[in-house]
Length: 433
Image (tube, rainbow, N blue to C red; front, side, top):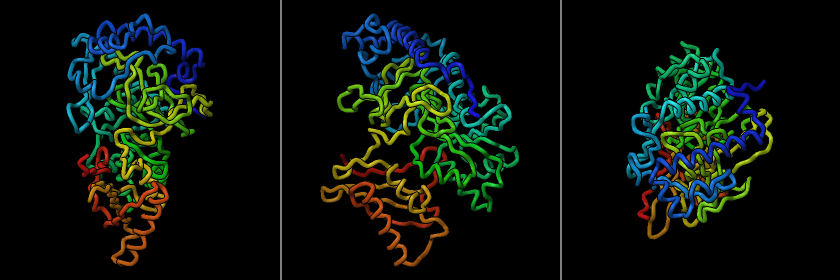
């Protein structure tokens, strides 16, 4: 039977949700207008005042915010409360330009942890569980968010952070951890290390995993579920909005429920900014309707997905988003073709390879090249050149069918691609574009 952390809101009627969103949006727009001069200027430039926003139907009138705005306003330009009321920052792990710094009041942290608690309960968690949080702590939101959510549920929390893989496995066994929270690539690595240690799914007590912070395919989910003997749940979020817990999967695993009492989602055409109808694939935009310290309105996430309000068997009534298909800014355009790393991952996993690969894009003689380095599993490892060439050709054909263009595939020895304990570095783009 499905469990809920806050059933009265997670299963609220559509009318109740809309009423709440209308009230909170009107209040939030006024809060931002009064306290965030940077965004007020954007509203003025668009000829919009708080009086123009009477309900969520008026949301489209507000200007967008982008990561560029966050960098321009760095560090305090989007702060919505006096500095004395902010109690924490978190920051993105971005590698270009200035880091994005997000601020939190006690109230903001409380709401964020409640969202993470909903995700843990949706994955079958309760105060009887032992939750191992193997996301990074510190500036990265993964560790602190799930740590707080685990406390709210009442789980015994093991704050291992990422890394020290053998110790992670020891704690899972010795402390009877039942829920694992980390990035999907690290979950896959834990499974791989367990195999090397001669351990299988029956040797560990885990029953569920909550994995996010990077894109992963359905095939990778199946792979992790089989290796660790768990049910693997997706969780979504971004530092700019709070962190993980903006949306999460229920046991039905058919999209992620967005916590609509805190965030309003829209899907837009990434080129025109026009709001698209439900069910259409486009760029996800979020408005935070009750965050005090860092209240972002119409923030462009760059994630590509669609929304659905179809009834979910789990009983939750909040809108669902599909697993992001990719990002408008990590989408590779190769010889005019849109390529997402998740498409390549799907082909590899369908052919029996683990999700250990690297995509190298370059430009030679004015033409884009696509090289994919793929690790062989220990079982398929061979030094027979003919056999390797046959396997490479099989992947070349599979990628051509999926992508519509030819890639060069190089099979490499097991464990020769650098492992990641955080977000995996999948793409190296050497083009000077």
